[in-house]
Length: 271
Figure 1 (cartoon, rainbow, N blue to C red):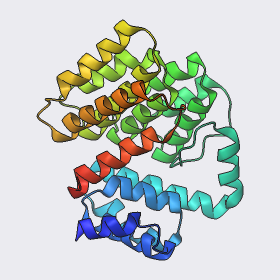
Figure 2 (spheres, rainbow, N blue to C red):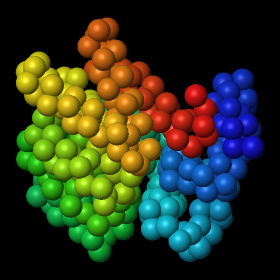
Figure 3 (spheres, helix red, strand yellow):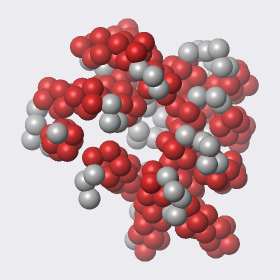
């Protein structure tokens, strides 16, 4: 059933209404609730709110509840701002990703954004907004603040932080990301994103010794007992090998290919 739903979701011949229905069904199966909740938030249809609200109070997994909170806040934000919000996000960001929160616009101080990002009492949407504002800033101080947030309690936030560090491709994040990958007690989805980020950073580096160190780490954890981690390392190594042989433009489809491969093989056994 899940394989059928996934194929329907990815079928471009299906109308948007049908593909939204398949996405809602995937969320309901609890096979991949976090990415499904994020996608529902990005689509922004009010019809998905009752389902998200129900999971917000009933799902036992903290990361799922937080993803629902985030999606609901995003839908409310889109209701208020509409297309102007989407246009603003596109104009302020050089990244092609569809972010689960609009970057914070009420302050430009890196110190204030960092304080908000690290504040465990703030809502997930506010912290994500600070994260994307820091990413769009892109300066060394902003990158350092993002790296510091890998110490957050929320696995959901940390997995997004790792993803953002992969987008920034700043070598300063390598040590912290390596520690995340090595930590067997860390949530698998955080280790997965750290793995992809390490591969992304290594691909931009022309220093052979650094590149080889990153590859060695990925090879080591390609034998990790957690299949989410081991297969993520295999994908990262494959993409590194491909991109080294066929150079691609930064921000190209390689990241999309990697995410799609991981999502399909992990959640739906599609090979």
